[in-house]
Amino acid sequence: MTVIVPGRDIADFAPAALDSLRAQTETSWRAILVDDGSRDDTGRIFEDATHEDPRFTLLRHERSRGLGAARNAALDLVDTEYLGFLDGDDELTPTALERMTGTLSATGSDFVTGAYVRSRWDGRGYAAGRVQPWVAAATDPERLGTTIFAHPAASANIVAWSKVSRTAFWHDLRFPEGVAYEDQIVAQRMYTTARAFDVIPDVVVRWRLRENGTSITQGKHRLRVLRDYLAALRDGIDVLHRAGARAAVAARLDLILAMDVPPLQEIAGTHPDPAYPAAVRVFLEELEALPEFADARVDPTLAAALHW
Image (cartoon, rainbow, N blue to C red; front, side):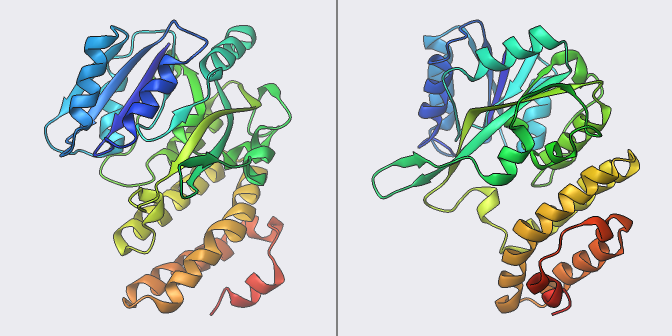
């Protein structure tokens, strides 16, 4: 089992991520640590880990190439039966690797995906919250050997680090490079190309929302990030649409309209750059033009605001 751990300027969080690997009940793992051009002590922390534990290997990028490129570079080095991902500012729960590899060993599926929770700053430290409804809908109850056609709600679980796969499944699968939200299209390709996958309700990752607001997901007010974000949503929907997974497209639309669109509209309402609301408006028009839009659940208040 190999875990790919990319990071850039995460010295404040990397020790906890590495400790969560050391604490795994499944001890037969290796981790490829990718320092993506960090300017802080991330590289030193990663290097120290390789000296302390031979299960850690370090890969350095002298200049940042982005999360997609960091993961891809490590993917080329994986030679174990299973692989997974952990962002260097997040943490695995102690039984995560044992539970996921054990499930794949029993089922023979291409990959398994589990639940996750957000970890937020509470003034004293980072505290894990509850499993959000869309995560629960994707992972609970346990389903073994399922498909995206049998379980369309799985399409909501779009993060790379909630999954463990058979390494052979990645022979022609790689992350987009040079963009943010690079895992969304990959997740939908996984769902639509897998012979079968498993979902489990176990929380496998604590996803850190940084108190200083520096993570990519906390930067949607920036026009460049917005464009990458909307492109990722479009591309993910397109993958499902081309696969004929109409129920999964409708499920994604339900979630996007309920969770993604309202905060984007709120930002757009006061954004100083007119290109921002224009980009959001074009995206909404594209959603409404999809044939699956008729199957989506649209809140009446939101429906009235779609053409604000």
